[in-house]
Image 1 (tube, one colour):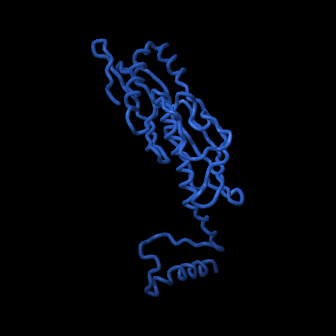
Image 2 (tube, one colour):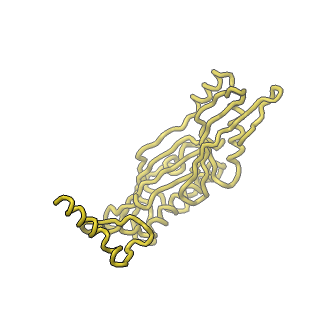
Image 3 (cartoon, helix red, strand yellow):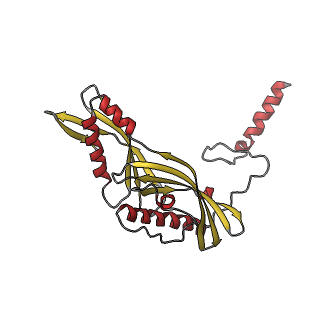
Amino acid sequence: MRLSLLLLVLVLAAAPALAGSDPNPEGAVTEIRLGTAPPPPPAVDPARVRAVERFLAARQTASTRRADGHPARLAVSAPKGATAEDLYGPSGSRLVAFDFKNASIETSGQGRFDVTVYLLFADGAGQIVESRNEHLTFAGVSGAWSCVTQRTATSMAWDSGAVAKAAEAQGLADAFTKARAHLKSWTAGARPLAYSVADVAASADGRVVVLCLRFRAESGRRGFDVREDPVVLSRDRGDLRVESN
């Protein structure tokens, strides 16, 4: 009885092929779904996305002006009570990159929506000094949104002091200083570039490796790229030389 049942299942499975039809010509696995597929999430209003990008881009421009010694003029309306540090970052820093996901934009009431954004701030040497997650609330109508509430959810200070102490303890302070000077020169230019040092150590062949993260962004545009590109230095007759950048 079990053998007959097995043969019946095999015949039913092979029926389309025996009938000369090929429901799966490319050999893909047939997917069987039970019930009704859930509807796709509603698309986010492009006007809301542009409003968030415009607000963050205006903050980036103003923070750059402030870091260059000019008055920080915000091209859009600011949330009531927001300070310069709230908008532009710690004193002496600039907003080098920002990002958010469309899916984080949520309606919070009639004519209002919330969004979570991520920000990176760097000092005058191009080194990351702070990262933040902010909750923003926008109010208005489509095409005329403005940020009315800004709240820092979490923030983290990025400090290279521990790495500097490690370099000094290993007798690598001069190499660490040269690596930071090299990274500072790498960040010079119009494009927002920044870095953060993570560790320093001497390799078996005498080279000095400074581990770091490098951040690349585009002015006025959300998103950034981050890579682990170490700085490698070697000594030539006592002089330090950067081998890789």
